[in-house]
Length: 508
Ligand code: PEP
Ligand code: MG
Image (cartoon, rainbow, N blue to C red; front, side, top):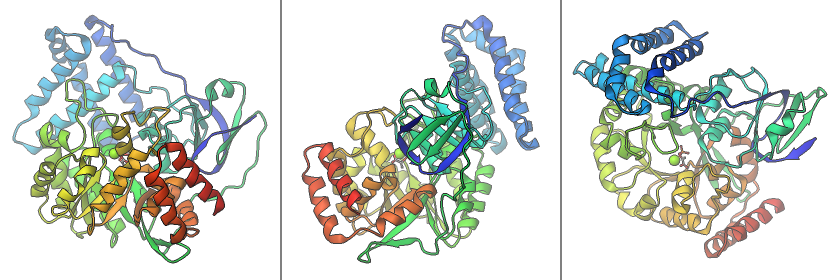
């Protein structure tokens, strides 16, 4: 049975099906008296997770296991006399505050405890995937959480088939950045897969089958000598790379890293200053003489949830106004790591000039750029020109906040005329500062064409899209592009824009 979907990472892979079933959910109505058994289940989960990991990580986990099993911690939770989640949250905050002394080491523990708090609360709310994934299989699920995507990566999953249509949700971006062949928009995939043993992902098609199929493996990217691709009529387009994980810098040479999403480090529990410094320094050496653009932790919202009791505020405002300590630690790690002077810093979710001035003070001589990903920042792009070194446009969040629709919603579309008008406006107000696009629109065939038609010449894209980007760029020519930009800016409806871009793409 063959079904067409949307290819996130185009490739051909074949393997045994592994269907992701939802794990047992602890409900919010669990009573405080059950707390000991819940904590013990979480401890077991943690210990299982550390199987096969190195000693350093095991030691680190054991420290927290000690706290979770201590009688005084349980008593502390019971004394809070609130509902279960709130009581746990308050108890961990209390311990964390006790560690928050002047001593750097204790400060680290204090911050890490907050990370464990998030994990534990997610675990209780049933959001943590406890099941292990079948190695080297084709994963079939309705949708994935970020954790599940990370777990799929860790389990060497060969390919992923999902029912969701949410192109730019973070779990899908993780798969895209890791280059895992992924296809989405396959209706009823889970029900259908139950009747089959194997699946073949063939670019934008899935074949469910009970027979083995032999396929010849092709690498998903090749190396390039230049970080510029040229259009048919010679316009140079500079390409940078988006990465989510430090090891990805090894997969590609000769390109600047335009976006390193550090929040995935946070998700993996890496928040101490020294650990961060080592990671950033090693990455900068590997990338040198190219640039490593480190984006400050983008926490909150649909990203790594901050935690219950914390404000629903995201990105730089969370760091500046609610977790200065985490920000200070990250910035000092970056400064210490920047021995080769090839690190730049990117600020997420900027909405006002004051935020940037605050961060700039801390960064001293390191170049800074801001993400244009809120309508607020897009509309005042010119106000930032004097204080930043570059701009990087995030189409994923810019679209979600412009259209008031979650980026992981199935009807999320980023080709709305208003999104394009904001991009066009912001770009036109950014000159002469470098302006790149690191959002997902730049690694979407018709999105890339639209952005180039506006005159944008720098794009930061996942490694998995390099080949395709080159193929498309080399077919473009300026005359046709200016016609396209006019059509986009004067369009009334999203469909008009998509139709025009698709028509051009098909004619290439
Ligand atoms: C964006 O919003 O477009 C972006 C690049 O940031 P992220 O996807 O990490 O939120
Ligand atoms: Mg964003």
